[in-house]
Length: 380
Length: 247
View 1 (cartoon, chains in turn yellow, cyan):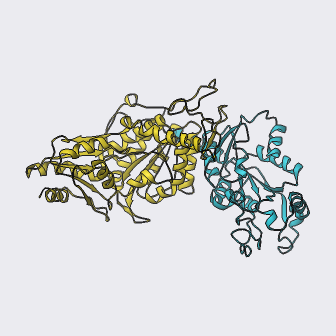
View 2 (cartoon, chains in turn purple, blue; view 1 turned 180 degrees about the vertical axis):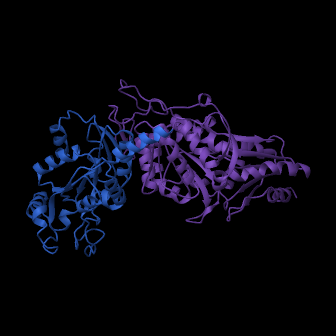
View 3 (cartoon, chains in turn yellow, red; view 1 turned 90 degrees about the vertical axis):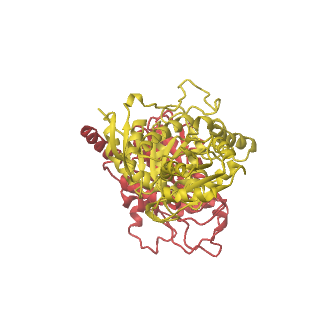
């Protein structure tokens, strides 16, 4: 009898919680490659997934890992892999393939300091843009940003659900600090966890093409004569490598199915957004400092509000825009050399100055004191 | 393509419902996608083998077959090929070897003969070609064979053996590309290329008695290995069974 975690409170590492979330979501296939600081996800899956009859295999590199995940997904299985910056870079071509063929899969990127080999054991938040635009050409991405061990469990489950709902790869953008910390988290009874499975065509469906925005997904080996290709294709799966009309229709659907449904996808935590003097937009480990800063700023007479992104992409434009309309400034702290900042500035559209707060290297977080100092500077 | 289909048919398959095809990029990868009435996953350059592994391990009951060219299989995809052979992954790989990157107009490939003038080696290829079948056999495959498209009957029999092999099965087929390769190295037409294949094919047994010098620009044909060994699926599922019991 496969043993899901019994409901209760656990003191767990972030990466382990991610793996348990995947198992709870119904993931039964993992192919991966070791990389700091994501290896614990792989190792925990290697221990637990076979207990459920699931497949865990170490591939020869990150490309092969995502390749095997894609193959497994086409047999109908929920499949995932986990990596960090350098591995995420290697996976980009196949990520594009998964977008193009509408292959559900979950890719966890536990960010570390880069670029290149960088500081393998130290936190970073520099993959924000890569998670959105890492592969070439046109598509829309869903990127979730957990900031706690609890969220590594919850948002990994959400990642699978979104992946199955929209027939798309979903990226869980964690970071070394969130993934490596140990915290209390609560596991609900497995029956209470909402699980979404992809819509499949019935064997009698002769036409299961793109009648809906998200086409039902056939599996191989079930008599559908699946025609999946990374080339531009029409609803039947046949290649059309020269026709502009087919290409436009395809690409608009790939982008549209996410962006037209962004209301259902966008997720954030908001505090005091209607009355704040200073607005903060943050995600991941950096957001942990923001909570404390709200209190210390109040003591100095400044009302700080924040939006904490639980989805970075699609970006929650509306709330950020609204919050900026009455704020004196919007502060964007991140452990990189400005990435989220550009998106916030775009959404804010000039209603308030957008102030980046950046720190990189050594795995050092932006402290509440440092954040407060920046906030005080911005009201001065 | 026809040898494979004939082989499948002779083995009793009336359709391809028990097959899943994976292919990458290049003319050869178009063999299953879209020309075969079957499940086909057309993926990125060189990555058809790991995708096939994902399919096979989740659906071990299906025959998973990869079609690819020499660029796809031993160029960009070389690492995946060797690991698949090492694992004895029970899939079949057909490598259509035209000794060139044909789709993109005739650039040099890891299998191009030394000295050949291609679009990226206009002064002559300064590298030595790879013996893919020998490499795959050494890496652990259960079946590895090479033929040319001039060896019709042997190809069909070999394909049959490859389809039914338990374990990694590799069939290399030297194939003419008159457009991107043949006409640039002096072949007037396809018939000339096929004749050259026939004249320059040496059976494996005979080749083993020849010197390296004598074998330059010859194509050694035959079955390099045909053996029984535990497959990756056997080993994975054995471990899975034990793991489930510890749960």
